[in-house]
Image (cartoon, rainbow, N blue to C red; front, side, top):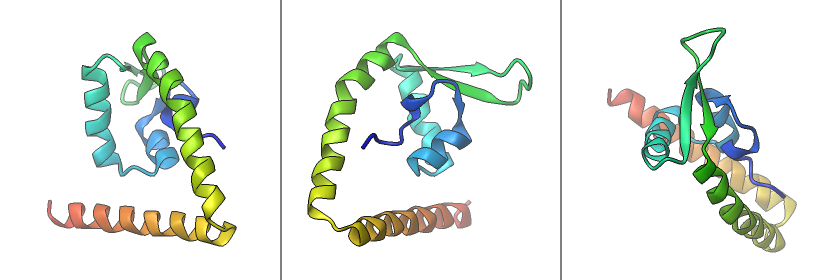
Length: 110
């Protein structure tokens, strides 16, 4: 099972990446900033709508993906080997709840 990561499809916008990775957009911006600083991704403005920014892996980002993807896939296999289908769904629900709780706490503090 492949991890639903930003590298599955180059040129996604931040909202799409946040939805696929289940990372709160405000947190994701910081992650993308660091990946860009480290030369792993680059931001490109949309030619159709300059307000939209798309994220692309650099050559270095593609190399990192190739190194990490098998490890992520193996982690998923190991998790699924010890969890029932219901436990797997419950795990995702719990993670969603934590993300929502964190996002709510951050929005109420600003």
